[in-house]
Length: 189
Picture (tube, rainbow, N blue to C red):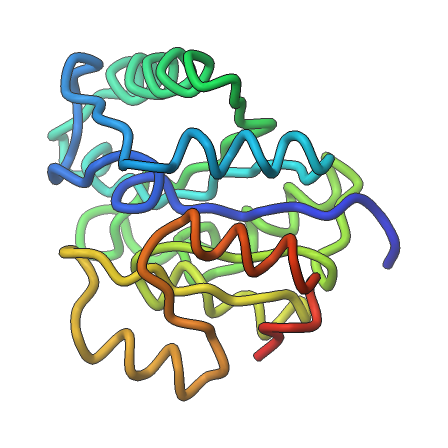
């Protein structure tokens, strides 16, 4: 498939600090360098697509309205850095609460939806996040996988991601630099 390149990014722990079930816009804190990294993607005409699991909604810890307010605040904080997100897709489910679904990462439903909605090329895209589930779909679509080692990354997941062909990096900035410098082929799992 040909289409626009994209950066499929996780939100919590990748773009903003992961404070577990963030429900209040005042708690949004941009991870250092994330705004500049996203601006660089914007400047290179790479669609920035957030795909995020939000099980706090299923658990009753976050309302859909609170989730939307956090998204709006994230957009405001990014805009202060001259950056923007093109689209956001989220899974509000948790298997233990709402049963299985096809949209919870590493499921591919939300990615398929984004590819179709936005005319994207998965093979020319990057998949980045702080958890293994954030990068596994790179293999399915033939894109670049970047696991961002963060405090929220279980140690075994970094090792498993590397074994699966993902590049393990220290920040979103590192992932974006590598992706823009070498293209999708450099980190294809």
